Structures are given as structure tokens and as C-alpha cells.
Length: 342
Image (cartoon, rainbow, N blue to C red):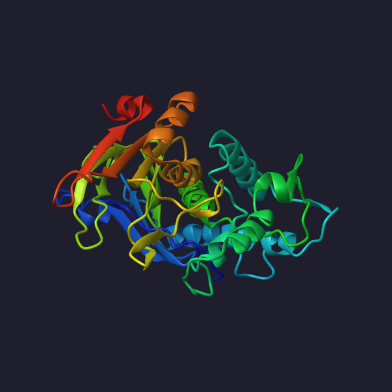
């Protein structure tokens, strides 16, 4: 299977908590596997014991194959790879699936003041967080050259079911939104089998429907943003929503005593430098949660809460506290997040 591997190697900061052992195993189907350069987990509650596990696996694999054939940057024959190979002046038709993802990407890009951007591959590569992995501080000229090759407004034009590149060297990478869309798409496949209570998680991005086997909303742990301790700072009950988190603390390099995160701010062409360590977003679907969690972390807590208030985004920030001797964190939530988790 082709993969939609993330060029920014996002951290996986949310985790479905272990289910209680008070239900019969035959009532629950759990399937795990690999896709999109990461792992996935699907838990489906079979109330009537009528589901065929092999049929569930076939539906999951079919949904994931469809997403990869459309959105994998690592498959030269995929729809997005063929589009990236185009020159300028070609208004390429897109599938319904790719149209939905690209429209969402542009919408989040606009609402987040450009912080979520599917075209910043040149900046990610320049800072050494892409395929080359040569991590070092670039020069000002190099940064500006890479910025000129990036940015939705600079590089592409989205129409009704069509996308046109306005720079021949522009490249669109969907890793920051594709895993979330994949979780949603698998969920639709499960609904097609008559499953109403399920959780689909791909690389930490998830969609949860209905109730878990204990009859509760799906219990999702938010990880402490610590490089050495994978503890849980909080638990969120999720039902009929997508959830995703982004963090800055598992992928970075240090040079001359300065720490450089893999999260590149498109507005500056440089890694983010604020104190915000992670951002967790609840949204109507995993696709939007995926994109907004990246945008919110790049914005940082202070600006992010302003944007969240303006657009009704449910976001929870975890920020480092620099005023204490030992590493500690402070949490901040938008009004929408507080209302959804009350």
C-alpha cells in the first residue's frame, strides 16, 4: 500500500485509553495495521454479534486504499502526485474526495491567517525536517527563496472541482490533513456496514462515533508534552466528533544552544518560537481537527485563542511554564472547547 507519510513527522499526542474488561470480546472488533507512514486502530462495537471481522477488514482496507490513491505524495500515480507534476495554466479536475480536502485546506488556511499551509514543503525541507534530514539553520536568502515557492496564495488557484498551479515548482503535501480525512473515510465505511459505535484513529488523529463498549463517550487521553514521559494530562470524552493534537517536542534540533521545532510558521519561514507545547482540537470531523490542530499550534496560545474565538474553534493549549525550576505546564481552553467538554 502506498503511504501518505508526513514530511513534518507530526507527533502523536492523543491515545484511546484502555477499555474496561467488563464486556465480552466477541462484542467488540479491534483491528490494527499500518497506513500513511504510521499506524491505525479501529474499534467497532458489534451489539448483535452479526459483524464479520473479515468484512470489516476489507471495508477498512478499501477505504484506506482509496485515500492513498487520491492523496499519497509517495505514489507517483496518485491523484495529488499527478497534479503536482503539472505546470502552470492547467486547471486540473479533481475527484470529489480531493476537492473536499483541498477546499477544507484552503478554508483553514484563510481562517488561520495562513498558518495551515499544504505548500510549505520547500521550507520544511530547507530546515531539515523533510526527506533529506540535513538539519541546520539556513541563511536569510535561503529562507526567502523557499518562502517564494510556498504559500497557497502564491502557488495555486482553487476553482469548482479544479485546481490550477500558478508556480510550476509548487508542490502540495496533504499529510497535515490526510490522516484526519482517512479516519473520517474509514468511519463512513463502517457506517456502510451498519456500525454506529466505533472509533477510528490514524497516527493520533481520530473520529469517534456513538459510545464505547462501556456505554460512555470514547475516552481519549491527551499526552503530557514531555520528551521523556508519555503521561496523560487529561481525558476527553469524544462522541460524534473528530479530535487531533499537534506538539512541538518530539521532532526538533538544537544549534548553538537554540532549539528549532519542526513546526514551521509560513508567515516567517522559521520554526515557531513561542511557549505553546501542544494544541488539541475537537471538530465536526477528523479532517478539520487534523488541520486546525496544526494551525493552532503554529499560531500559539495567545494568537490561537483570538482566532478560536473568532471562528468558534474548540482548542485546548498546553504551554510550558518558564517561571518554575522544574518543567511544568499550564492549560488554556477556548470557550468552544470548554462547552464541548463540560
